Image 1: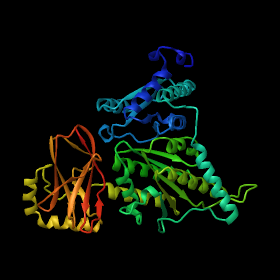
Image 2: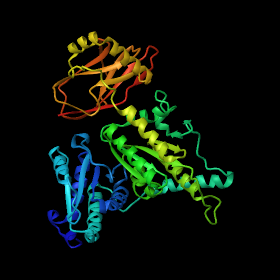
Image 3: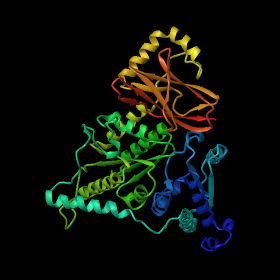
Image 4: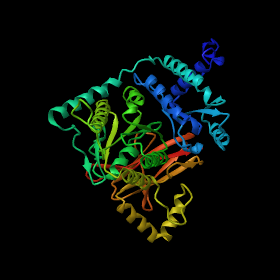
Amino acid sequence: MADKCKEPDIMKNPGALLGALISALAAAGRDKLTLLMPKKLESFSLWIEQLVAESTGKEGKGVVPVGLEELSEPDKYQADRFFARTLMACAPEPGIEERTASLKKAGHPVYTIAINDPYDLGGEFFRWEAATAAAGSLMGIDPFDQPNVKEAKDLTLKALATFESKGKIPAGTPDFSTGRMSVFASKTLKAPENPVRKYDDIFWCVFLGLKEKEYIALLAYLPNAPEVEAELKTLRENLKIYTSSATTLSYGPRYLHSSGQLHKGGPDNAFYIILTNQAKKDIVIAGEKYTFSQLELAQAIGDFEALDSKNRRVLRIHLKHPLDKSLRYLSERISKLGRPREEVKGTHPQGEESKMLKLTTKKTNAKAAAKTDLMAMGEHVIIDHPKNLENITSWHYGIRIGATKANGVDISIDDQPWQPCRHSVGYWWYDWCDFAPGMHQLVARLNKDNGEYLLSKRRRCKVI
């Protein structure tokens, strides 16, 4: 492999070729390097994560390595993915050929690396190191520098110094606290129109804050226990399903020396969720006044403050024990908020308002019940159609919005200027015409009489 990576012909140089692909696809918006590994090599993706994230995440640029993420159907991905698959001859994976073929057919780039057995890993280390260096050079950055890693370290030392002088880690005041958890929001998330005061507000921050081709980073300062790991995977999968965004899951403080550089030095294209807890058993560090748990909390707070200082969107959720149940509760809330409201029987074909008028006449009681359900959920404005991640094939689509006590409703498509909607048969409508193929995101805005407004959660749909 070392000799091959010296080839001047890029097509014969496996390191330079992979690096060129990473750089070119990142420049085209496909900056989520999604690693598909055999089960026996899954831990290798963690090393690649450290290498790529720390080397490319600086000067507002960066490639986001996504490892150990469950593979979804091709139409559930945004156009920000580049799949790098490692195929090991001695460890065949049933069904993976068909699934990667479907990814290619859907237009997602897939690069396959074939090896014989785990003994070939030495060469793969070299390939990825050469590729990362090449990608960094093509991106116009120094892949051997880590300018932002020290920022979180300095803030950690500051927190520990405060503990030594005052006997308490400066954790700050939570935005809200319950028997399950305490939640701390960065200043970027503390908008007057979207205060973080209850559980659902946590996820409104995520759903409303994410834009197209952004990702969610779960940063867990939690014990690596089987039950905790299982709930973290479920939480990650739910976030991916209901936002259609890429997700990463990293354990702290390990990630500070890998993706931590990308988080602070790379582009502002992520929503960070830091998960902390109070250890049940703790040990004092020899020669220090603080324990291992207090050191870990100081590191988490230091990273939160470093991200906050760069106006990143970040939540710190301090979980109460039992941790698996607290994590499960978060996952369940995401499922409830992210799932589109169930439609009444006899739903109308998409965009056909005239048929909806007939349905309204026939289903008066069902409609009233739906409005009651809407109020009970505390959602005063919601995009009913299209459903989240729905495929649309028509050149014309009537977007339907349910709202209560609205002085007017506007809609924004792909973060473009707000457009007014019209009111008819109990709903607000927007005639969407001549839209381009691909993924689109929709947000509705309810205008109140007092001049304030409410935002719906984002809906994503795909035009095929």
